[in-house]
Length: 390
Ligand SMILES: C[S@@+](CC[C@H](N)C(=O)[O-])C[C@H]1O[C@@H](n2cnc3c(N)ncnc32)[C@H](O)[C@@H]1O
Image (tube, rainbow, N blue to C red):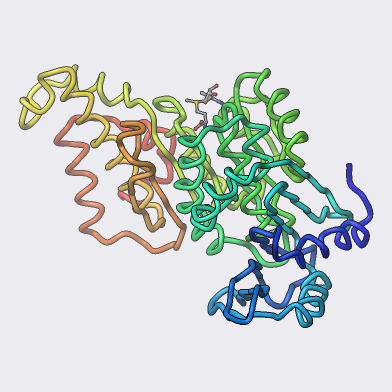
């Protein structure tokens, strides 16, 4: 339940000043239309020759500045930080984790969870490597284990630079996740974006299964996520739904087979500036390769397992090329270590509007002609692709 902000912040003060009990604290994000100075601050106790002091590392987003405060100075330093319009305070002590988030209405949403000293010692050194703190209540609500947390981190590291690049001026960032499933990546993205990029970010998770929308909305409310909604709809329905206007980032993570193509086509039609797609199975191109006659290097596609692997590579190469032809700067990168999943490629694209060179056009036409494939994405975007190839 939201509560008045000032008394909630006052309760953090003794925790931050208790250098025996404090493990670390992070102040980050910003409140609606306000900008804290510094942009982020991390507090931790340090053992110096002169005794325990409170260390504050403040950053303006680029260069961190670290300063140690003796007990008699620490109160003023903490008061100054509590007075700044941060959107989030994460305070970890040896026996509890307090997460304070400022809502759009300027109230405090506080989650407190107990933790053991052993857990603190085990997690402490690793915590700074995570984009969402492992102690965040979101993970508890999602029941996410270590592997899922690592996947979340890997995904957020890919999303963060794109979100920074495409964040619009004067209106909230809008993100749509097509085929969101149980939405743990959608929720993690929303948590991260609202804390670090735009407190007003609006995220919409779409899945064809109605039970997912209901379940995801309940879980998101439990995790205290505002500005995140879920819709039971197919990607095809989303294509004609006026609700989906002004979408800045499209996510399509492990959407089955040509659902990835449907999602990429929508991203192009919506003129989304950022796209992150982690493709899943590639049955469509596999079938076409099997049926093709007289394609080059037939040995590449003769055996089912090799055909499957080659179809993965060919499909994603074609998708990347098509997005390039349509004015996106595209990278295909490893999403998560291949020991966790073989479906580990991520197509990252940012719209730049750059027209393709003749060489790029020729590369694409030669590739689809040689392998005798009709790519689903080219089919979905036929008018746009024909205009570029003409
Ligand atoms: C493999 S799951 C991936 C879920 C999630 N994105 C993730 O990465 O964990 C694929 C999801 O896409 C949904 N889906 C498949 N085809 C769809 C379509 N045409 N429209 C909307 N959702 C679809 C399925 O219901 C399923 O939840």
